[in-house]
Length: 526
Image (cartoon, rainbow, N blue to C red; front, side):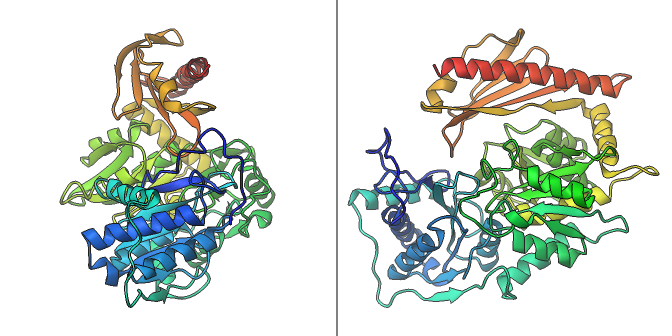
């Protein structure tokens, strides 16, 4: 069994299936992740599939896992329980990135996909993500139907199905092999990114002790991108020993890859999170330091690229979330491309085109370093996106002697002149109490950092959004995966004669409102 941890105040409350899966600390009991709770998830999923989509039994369920503690064992439990219920299973033979599971599920039109991972959570956690036949994370009504089935199994009101004969198992190989699932992923990623130029940058990468290193390395090799990897973070290690948190958004997590980039003179640094569905990007400046891009800055670069190449595609659509920058929707609208703004999470983002018949996904992105580029990408993908970012950067116009950082700043300056200087300053507050009531206590706030709140709404339950008098936007919500409240601040300042002055003003506004918002949250949590 997984190691037992302190049960804490929620020891009597079982883990619940939600956000298209389940995630929590490893340990004994129904409130933590262990063989028993994983069995409940597998049995509930099997009951749902057999009741709603009988053909799923022969189309099968794709099962993959990362390299966290107990991931391999949990994947075996899922495989055994699905087989027992009469469902065929298509299983990866070693630890693989999440994007490989979602894409394979869609390409094979499987009945569902299951990935055992806790993504960027601490080493003490694990979890399960469930994808529908289209490779998109489960959403309504399937998510609640599976959740209900899992709850019934956990409560003893239903038992797992048993079939004679049991389902079969087909092996899909691993990231180092040449089986169709992997070679198809690499082929599609190369096609998506397109050919290189004579200015392909050198790249430094890190897998942050996760499972993305081997596949990203193969992709960069195939694309002819010169690269080096942080050796001490390349092999999977479930304890993530060299980082405070295995999350590329956290402070100092990128230190080793930036050190490697500086030593090798790499123009670009790339960091995947442990299951490689997200990617962080940094660029070398002329002075040798590195500019770590925000998720919204990478989103704007990708939007520029896909709108350049795909704006004339019939039904073209760009999707962002309500906490992401307002810049990309403005860019899409100006290009004559539809823009969708969804709740947070890729269960909504990649379903934006599916919910709009005739539409074609050019880009779906969220500020938390998640990106899905192109119509065939059904969940955020930090590996294929990494190559797309490299190609987008090398295609930027450059003046003589100008580096990638200068070329990208020129792009952002041009966008600021057209749409205003957008500057974000996001953050979070870790809590010892539930985040929902803390956020709710701030409803009715009349001013932030001395600027009046002109409108307040609740775009989705549990989320509070303010628009301030100076056009600064603030969004507050509780995290769906961690015990913290998140806040998202974006200032937007029109550009006059001096674009630098607009950037400075936008940064000052965003920073002031961000600090004030954090203080409000901390006070509300007392």
